[in-house]
Image (cartoon, rainbow, N blue to C red; front, side):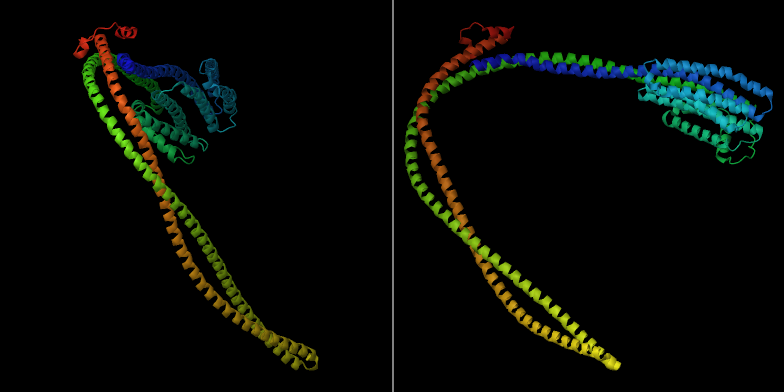
Length: 633
């Protein structure tokens, strides 16, 4: 009864624990989701800062690129007019400004080398410095000396532009979210398009003014247009909105579009030094058209970075809204969970009150059943006595049957062993006959091979005899000189005749031996067939005897199991008699336990705050135990 009472009174505490666990799980899951969304929001904020730094780098790069392009244009004028001192002086005036901007680039590299992102620029830093330190003086020397083709110098200035562009590319490592990387690559593609168009446009303008491009400049022109087209395709694929703005801004007039198509056609068809076809804008001059085209890039860059800000802010705002939604859902879930806990607790309390009333009613039923159990115990005791006598008689009969079954099992085992030995002997004889049959077949095969050999000997003997005859004829023709050879031929003929006779006698003997061998094989096959029949019959007998032996063993095992079962039944009958006597005393004990159960039910009803019901109401109120007082509190 103590066990029943303890479990019943502990249910409310465990129920509270089970209802609190889902609430805690909800809080943890919501906090993890909120932390993930907040981390994503922080990543977009960091990307916005990185793109702002990248925008300053783009601005600084464009200033340096414009100066390099201006120095390059002056270099082109020097190549076009090598004896013009004025153009040479104008070319030299660009050196100081270019060197100042390169020095500022070195300062930016020093600043990046000491920044938290220094590792991103560590590989390119020495390469960029070394390239400018060697290639910029080289381009100036080749221009001033005029000993190299102008296309080679243009290539050097183009490489200087692209080498400075590597600083911008290194900023890619500071951007981490897909939208940020997407807009970063788009801006980098815009920078490359601008530089490629600058080189191609300069080549086209100079070619139109001075009568045609040289062979080393045509591949450069073609490559720049192909690369710019590829980068523009990147914009179309990943940033179609930016690409549309780029086209609308840089090709807004008919002259812009016509000049762009003219350059594409020129890059794809120009193959020699023939003069370029002339292009005349409908309004203004071609240099003005080109200046207006590249001035539009500033608006394109501004639009690209504003587009980046709006995209990142939109995604970050989406993450903020989702985080707020999760927070609200989390608070609502906690409130619902706590409300559900209160409802479950009240429902459980009502259920426990109902259980206490059911137990009180059940105690009355158990009290009545205990009286009936005492009466039935007396009847069971009498029946158990008669049952024990009947089991004793069955046990004696089974002992006799078990003895006979053991004897039959021994005989069956001996018969199985005897038939198994006979089976093994017949199998061994059958195996020997098979070996004899194989030996006979081998002898017959050998006789056939010998007959073939003798036939070959007869053939050789015949041919030898024929050769000896021919030799004798030739010796006769030779006269006295062939007398000795005639004697040898006669001896060979005689030897061949004796070989043929010996081969014939051997063939006769082998023929007799083959016939005897065939007769022996026939008899051996007949004997093997009879042994097989005997072996088959013995196998069948062995299987039958084995089955009989198995049945005897199973019968003996079954009888043993029956004997064991009867012995158990005998013990059960004896214990039933003793158990029946205990049943009456157990019934009296049950009455006392029912009284104790009613008292416990009354205590539980009092703890839960319910009214007394049933027989438990009549029981005196016992003082609460310490554990009950704690549970009630």
